[in-house]
Image (cartoon, rainbow, N blue to C red; front, side, top):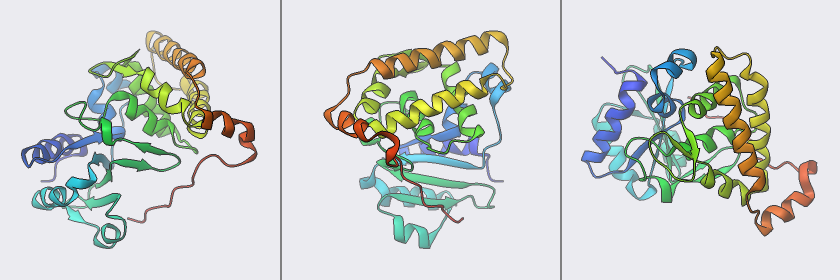
Length: 248
């Protein structure tokens, strides 16, 4: 029987590690695994896919790990995009696996290569947050996942269990006006839906405080020369990419 995405994600990270391949979870499954029972009960959902990041240099060995575990490659997609991304399906088709190699390019491009191996199971919370908030046309699911992450991670200047490195988030956004703008828009959107989420009063207060604190960190962080030059153009020119839809 094929395991659920929640079970399969950690299993594959361990299998890759045994083969000497660095593989880390991100996306909704990663956030669920980092969350406490109270947050899971309030905001957890069903997961139809598993997102991973791996090093490009280890992709050949990773293919052997995934196919050895019974996962079925999307051969045409992998032949075309295999230098940056791999797509696999569960043996019974119940879910699919997306593997991004070093970089995550959707509405904005995020480089995970140097941070991939900082933690043993998932990308650090700061990178999970950026991956969610870089979505230019964000949906309720991504906003809910972001709320889960913020509820169970204190803003900090370091990575680690229960910590969200706001210094890293601010530095990345301070170098890219477009990403800064999308993240800010999505924090506005999260504040807009927070009152509709099934949270108790304490959770709602924690979420509001952390969104506000993160916004202060983003606004106050140093901005690069490129950031300032792009800010002069502002919203008159589109500042994000429209990702290509993957047909599965």
